[in-house]
Length: 223
Ligand SMILES: O=C(O)CCC(=O)C(=O)O
Image (cartoon, rainbow, N blue to C red):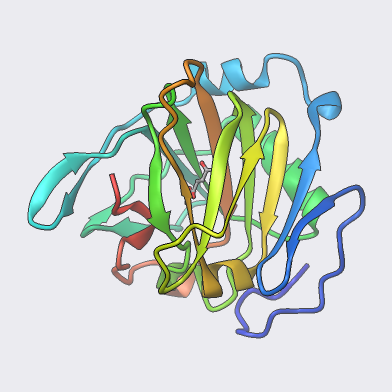
């Protein structure tokens, strides 16, 4: 397993069976795993998780985020944003199984997962980097997509121009190296033509000693 408490990004070669999708200072790998996943996994996840649509404060006003959310974590792991601690649910059978599979594929350990349900193409996620203090100096994020294909876009920090969009298809796993969070922002733009739901699960390693710090909330701040 890779030590996520150090700021140094370890040497990490392309994991087995993964496709390298970007390889300059944002190292991203993608697995297409439809054949290896149990049938009906997405529907079971949607049906068995409790969903929230929290409000966040942005430029002095409260907005409901444009998607539903579920936060699951090991005991004692908490995550704060916009001044609010996310209530962590225990691991359901499906989430536990998916964590195990993610750890086997990536060789990384994860103690939490943020699940986002985009009900259709009107739901979205704004520009952000997953670089909150709780994630430590070298955050690896493993991000599953199920259901509708959606565009996932990247831009360099400090720039407003999108440099790249890729389509994330059903049953794919995107692994983002710490460099992605250090140098880039990502987003999931609205796509009016998309009528089907999409489920996204980002497995994260929240550092227990940092768990009570208040984060900037960047990852969640754009409705
Ligand atoms: O839905 C996605 O693919 C992106 C999710 C994301 O950026 C996040 O949870 O921080």
